[in-house]
Length: 501
Image (tube, rainbow, N blue to C red; front, top):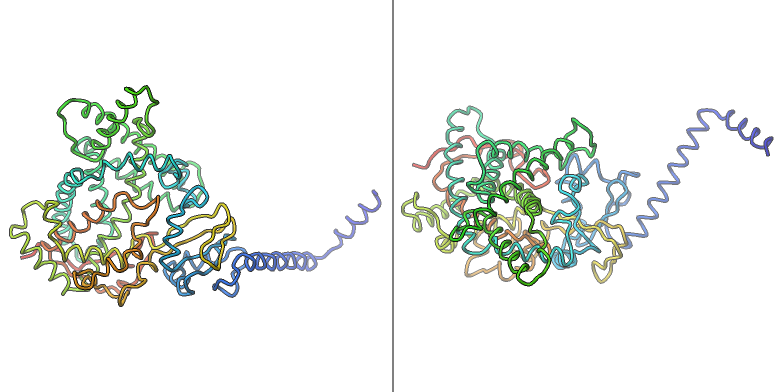
């Protein structure tokens, strides 16, 4: 035996570099062929790339040109396959099968976010919840979006938007190269979220720290998953902890105030606390355990999840609102005329009753969300074989991706055209193709705050008529970038913004 081993070692030692390279190359070829056979067995008859880049798939294309990658994938048809770093995925580009996936979202096919999401937001993030716990939490949150609550939020939203529009005019006066709206709208939405969620509980000092922390948290979500002091992920984790501490102290103050008889809620946290205190009292009366998600720490954590989920989506929509209204001055003029009729005095606050009367502005908002959904795709992972269509069942481990972008175009006439008239009382495409409109998702994880989001966009569009602005003619202004929500590729640069004369 010893003689055999020594002989073997002598043979190996005698191998040349070219022999070693040949063995490595052959091994890689065998591994690649095996990989391709595995993909063939998983994809069945689905269309997709003829061959994938060995081991890494489409990751380089996706990083360098995400729009081209994902929209090229959608062009394969209703169902198509591809791979990213060895992960097999199926993209769904028709509305019925997309709805089916959203409605089947569960522990057997949960949502998945960036790998950093778990470390930053925790395994118990609302996006990762499923089943009875998730259903109970959503029921708990319903009082946050009643008509009364939305009315109070509307006042806070309007105040913040007006303040920022004044700032934008001042910035424009002092800018020689135009102003990029995406970061300015991002800042607007942070301040709006803070005003709506925590109201007067937040001090200027905490507000500024929150904004710094939130930027670090956002950057960390899509940074390298390397975690040690100094990395962006490390900064993001520290930032998330800082935000939760601030929110927890605010929840404690709200509980103290809302425990006083006669006090009225003035922000989202207050409405949450009113509902929570009622649930706690009911549980105590009936000798039941403390309700889920009712401690200061739990409420603070979920509040952060809420704020994080809304921020980029709202920024995308408001940025595209300016972009599309600049491209379509005739549509902007119709908005202006409607607003002049409904708001003869532009300084009078906008009420929920007034929003209801804004028929054309509503159409513009709806078309904006149809044509430019902030999140174009939503990733799920199959924990067991999932039947996607009559002809195809995705095997365990498949990443299943319904395309909101594609679904929002199914059935609608001339779907690539920005056409608010499709939602008027004659064409009624919002009724005819309502099932295809998936901007807010559907099923157990549909967006709870969609009425709030739509109010925010309508309010923003309504107040834009008080401004004059002109789109800068940048070469990439009509292209789309993914961050991962979508934006005009130039960030929506305006030559100027000033008050309308």
